[in-house]
Length: 363
Image (cartoon, rainbow, N blue to C red; front, side, top):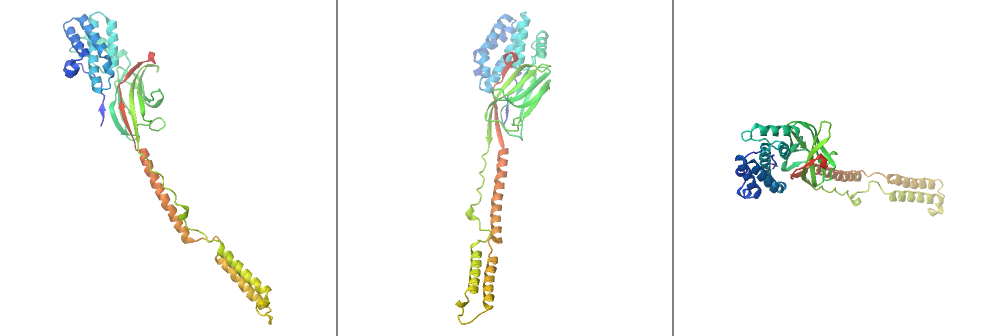
């Protein structure tokens, strides 16, 4: 669910827009007294009440409670408008212009009620607004989105036509991602996909959106810094499956022992027949027969060696081992694809804080 931080432009009397608890505050009472004195044409008294109201209510604008901040911004904008009008009628044009500039910087979209304030007041405000280069940021109070697929949307509203740039930075000022650089007349919508300039999500930390107003030559005038508390949610990945143990694999070649035993036995027996004829028959001369018998025995040994030769492939074992490896590789691919899906499914939760205006001279 997205809840938006809406710029406050209302010009209604605060007593009609705030709760009884807020109306009981001193700053609000002073504002009501100032508006009443202004309506009675007591401009000096009105200016006094309104300045006190601004002083006492200033701290509440930076409250961590968005509702309190919005109420106080309405009250402050109203006080600044009436104060500038009172200063104009008191003959303090420079003070009125400075007050109007503060009002523009508070909310660049503010428009005075032209049924309440005469042209000599509204014309001064319009001139100050046209000369002031400033931007108001409209951002979700809190938003959740998927990195790389969904967008975190921001709206930039300008006081007058000028160039501006917007970027996501660390609290230390390191730029993570440039979101926009160009002209802005009324408003511009910028989007962030949650990635930095290198295509990576940021770390969970408080970063900041920095929107800078620029002169025509690119010189920074002032900037708005909006804290963004970012929480990165990355799903845990699955461990890779272990490869099959060596003990599960069958031998893929015949062992050398039986082949050499057959060869050695055949040659030994054949040799014995050739060199020891008397062992077979002492009174008979076998002549060439012993050579035939010895050769046959030796040939049998050689044949046994060849049929049991070492390193002969055992086809059934080779196929069984290949199936074992394929099963492990298939499981590995499944885990790799699942982990890629999990790593790509990164959720960002972004919570916006209270903006801070930084003048170039203060940087």
